[in-house]
Image 1 (cartoon, rainbow, N blue to C red):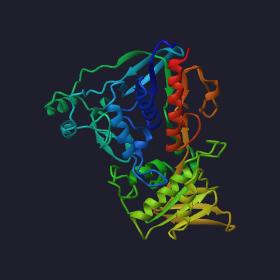
Image 2: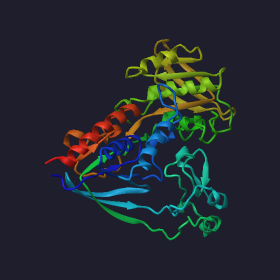
Image 3: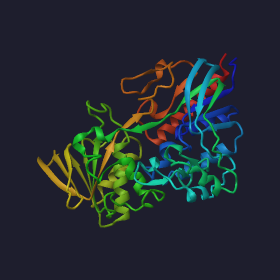
Image 4: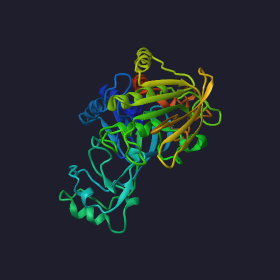
Length: 419
């Protein structure tokens, strides 16, 4: 019989949360380790899901409640796994937890942020705005607890936060901790990262002010984003009435990501609807190599976009993107495959459908697993009791990540009971 009845879930994104609550509600102890100061992962940064265009906070809130009400789930934020040793039923895990400088007495009153004199770049909004060094990651963060970014603090500025807190929730004496866990199975759910769009020199990201990525577009469109949901271009706050989407920005390219990132076409179709719904007189043009909409309902989603007279779909690979310094507009040069000509068109803003990179690409925290050259987990080689989920194995959307997480939950429970 397995020696330990606890499962470690590495990553608190949607697939990790799903696996955790399913395992715990079957009667097993679960420990979630998340490197961010909040749970929810990439889904927390989305404005809406495709294909129903509903906000993700509903699903997140349900899972947060399930975690909060289940005493068999323990979670650590600002934490990373440093080492895993052992075998199925008896793994020894070392976890490093960074100090939050805010304890469980925090009530989310915002007094510390109001008093804080220092600012930091807001990574949650991909650098499009700033927060105080004492901050709440986002308005529905779980845990609903502030965090102090010590690296952004000016000299002695933390004292202002401490003095402002009447609940004694600021603990400036917190130190990094090392926690040792014994678990019977491990679920790897570290999610995905956006491909570095600055590597694609011809597409202008980082050089042309009004060229953004698809995830930046999600934050611009979100009510809790840097512009409170108004789709405004970064350089001057102009309403975006004429927008272009560039597909396969890094994907299906042997110089960048040789694989298809799966979600990009659907994400751009969805985001074109964001603009069309907010500005009825707007126009959106999508430049694509192939439009891929796998799934039962997703193809209907494509036809919905095609039926919109304000959305134009153009087959052709973008050759270059430059900026007009006088107007701030973005100039796109592309070959129109069906039209048989080259197009040079100007837009208020351009969104790059940057590709999906597995969270293991740069940090392979589990040594007893083989990885593909692209960083995806080769699940067939995994050591017994260690399971990868969702985008760690291949690019997938949220729905398929959840389905996979449910399957991995069952496998983890089997590991705990295996003789």
